[in-house]
Image (tube, rainbow, N blue to C red; front, side, top):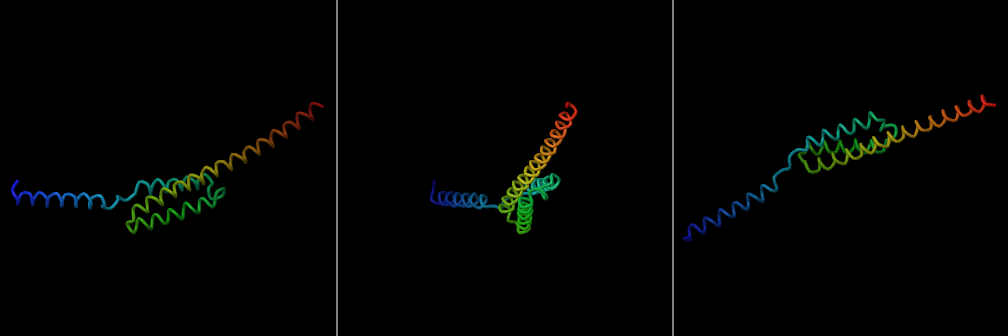
Amino acid sequence: MNVLSRHQWYLAAAIGCAAVVIGGCASVAPPTEQMAVSKSAIANAVSAGGSEYAPVEMRTAQEKMDRAQRAMAKEDYENARSLAEEAQADARLAEKKAESAKAQKAAIVLQDDIRVLREEINRNGK
């Protein structure tokens, strides 16, 4: 290689490296799918009774979702994705707590029904 082509090669390599570095720092794609999944998780938690049985978790999920939407508006996509994921986790926790509370209530009602039936059986058997 002559001096001129070597200089051009170094320049091309430097430009290539700069392009890779800049490309690596390029903006993250908007987390639209995660936002939709998180909104759906919140809606499911509300439908399951999360607002009644897990109000703290529901409030936390909604607050994080609101913050995620603000981050999206500012094009802070990494923060938006993180907040949306946290909101989804909080909503799922609220949903599971609500389901658990409902199951516990149903078990108590069933136990009361069994107790009443046993009393009826004992009364009729005597």
